[in-house]
Length: 184
Image (cartoon, rainbow, N blue to C red; front, side, top):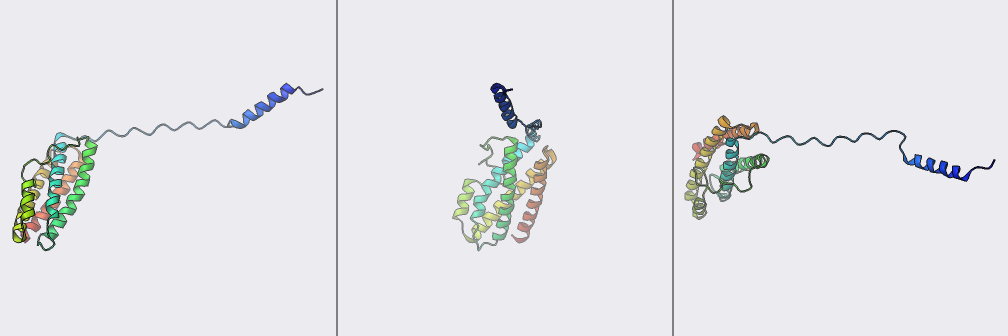
């Protein structure tokens, strides 16, 4: 009996097709990554506190940058700058997570403890003891206002990380104020 060419071709095609098919069923596709958790519950106090502190801290940094190396306030200025930079990073992260607008409505707002453009201009023009007196007064007002605001956030805030930052700010402000009162 002569082999049927059509059967040979069909068998060959089935064999080739079988080579491309897995012998075991394909593993099920993993479910897509879980949806991100809803943003933490920021309350109105949290939102205002975040924005006010960002504005106050951002306005303070240019004043601290003016502190000359010969100033007796140089070490305290460096300490305040270090914790301000650290706090700003956390505040900005909270700001983003809370979905606050890019434009900060508190920026440049005249309020206790805020470094204003006129204060910065006066500090730029001041030298020696005059600069030190101006800086000491501005730092005292900034630190006291920061302490007051942190106390309010601690008691009326809702979001846990924001309240924890307020607690940390209370400690840094108290420490810096104690040094300022002791030495200046």
